[in-house]
Length: 366
Image (tube, rainbow, N blue to C red; front, side, top):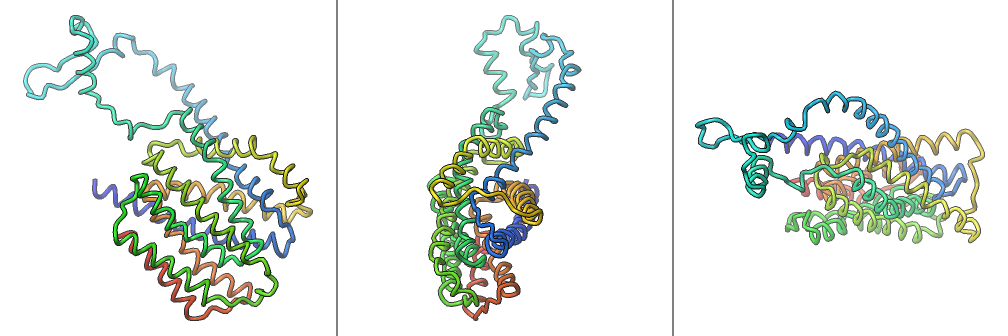
């Protein structure tokens, strides 16, 4: 059992590392769309990104058809065979007790039910979610999921990739608090210290470690920072609530869940285009070149369709807090990207803050 738990955790951390690299690349891609490509349409991009989840329904449908084709051969058993339940004799003597067949015709119903329950104990927390439960879960989380993603994408229009990644990483504090209240996170001194160390690292970077060459061209950087912080709060909420509802990854049909999220996004959120267009907040406009379309689709299929699937698996295999603090590893990567592509000058407090955040992630895994 210990080995299997270790294997699951190791796999979860490996998937998380993949997500970190994908998300950093996606952030720079979106930043490029908003800046150099002058396609500042966060709602449009987020709608396309989340809508790609509906592609998972194609695989789910194909899998359902295959199961239906196999079922006729599995239904050849007689009804009497289906009603027979064998209970092993604990004493090891005599023949097994048969329930539901001809040998138990005189057994009272209550006794038969008790024997059946003993033979096949039910563990609700280990049962796989039904199709109905999975679809309702996907629909219920669609709005929260969309809100967290659009606020993060919108933040990139007003602040740097590094600042956006840094402030989004503060969701660790919200994740720990909400997780402790929901009973899915252990509120220990070590974890609390890890969150504060991560927060201290964020403060060190934002307050003293960042000096960008284009800071003068970002007069609304406070707005971008605020949107990134709001995204952190929303992320902490839906991450914890997903873990609380699902528990283990074995209980969830992940493609069906994401497919439900994508379909709900397409059906429920399209009026947002009308509201934003006529309010002047975001004029509806299709990309004007094949290159921009290509960037949007790559970001949607890799930065959302694939990465969020891996993210959910990683979160269910580890814990919301571990994944949340792990995603703060995007900071040193995004920092390196800003240094190379945007001429950012990073001082010693910046590197010190990144080191503190990395230490916090390690402490959360102890």
